[in-house]
Image (tube, rainbow, N blue to C red; front, top):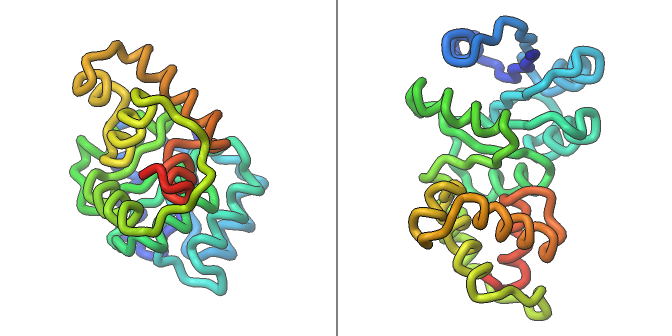
Length: 209
């Protein structure tokens, strides 16, 4: 497995390398200290995972960098790993193609578990960020003409907005995890979203949250 770490702080890059090596057994890492270096390295290196700091030097804002990285690496998970918790910019990054967002003060154990979930295909957002995003989504004005969702799909959508995993949703709704996965898939299809995070944004725009 190959990982591209995009962060301008050597100590932060070293810390992420340690988590990757000790938690996931990853030794093959490339590093980029700025946006342009990341865009130069990514197409040739073809990483299996990108860890991206949102406050990266260079002419491109973080959402635009996410958009370029997504275009260059359409199937590679992009994880925001940041100390910055501006929900509007995080939301823009998620819409631009990021798959997950973790805060830098996350413990190594939780960071490892979150990265494992991302590698397994899940979208993961630190609960603190998820709650702030959810509040922002609720506060935005409703937009009519959204897709028709069932009552249970709306229940699942509300819990996704809280940052719950499939297992947590299953426990809270007294459903099997397989059933929850089915509801999530249905939500993604109805909302024409590629990820849970994009689904939340689209649901908000449609006035469903």
